[in-house]
Length: 217
Ligand code: SF4
Image (tube, rainbow, N blue to C red; front, side, top):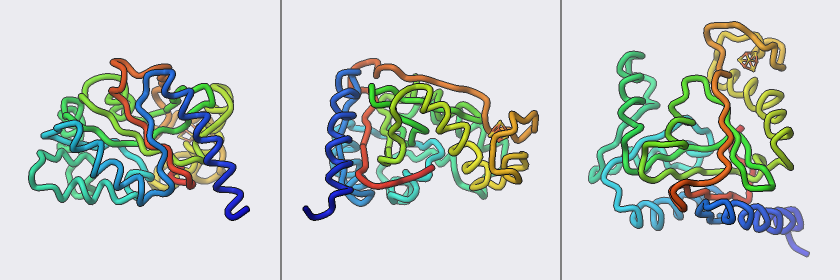
């Protein structure tokens, strides 16, 4: 068999897609990040009729090229919450406004095999938007985010994703030095709000693009 690893993951992604669909999420499987980009730009965005768009921090979303492509769209109101040149106060205000856009793109920290999303946020703008506000939410999710259950999801986030994200963001937190969560009290702590999203409400509000490749942290 050619590409047995991809075949293994394709079968697993199909099972997870079934569980997510049963939980009222809209699910598309993409073979790689390029296909994920096409799915969002050519299918999900036009189908949504969106006039405004924004983002939650997500390495997968950036790496797929979606952040750049959406930012470049002149026909959409784009609330760029991730521009490093924007001063902190303005960034907070943009994140508040982003909760009211038509189309919000981000990622998730983990997906369980039962079709639940698990996230841990520093600011809360990402989990806030996933939960309520934007009319349409699209999550780009690499196969590396799939875990057996809620316990494994929380372990994945605290043992890997949070320290690795703190490193990615150059945060002044102890995990950046030690490589493990120290349950810090740092002002830069990125672990403040957990969410477990059991189902999409209303049905289909949250679209999940499952990518048959590792993506994001
Ligand atoms: S609680 Fe603090 S030390 Fe632990 S992962 Fe989060 S930021 Fe790092």
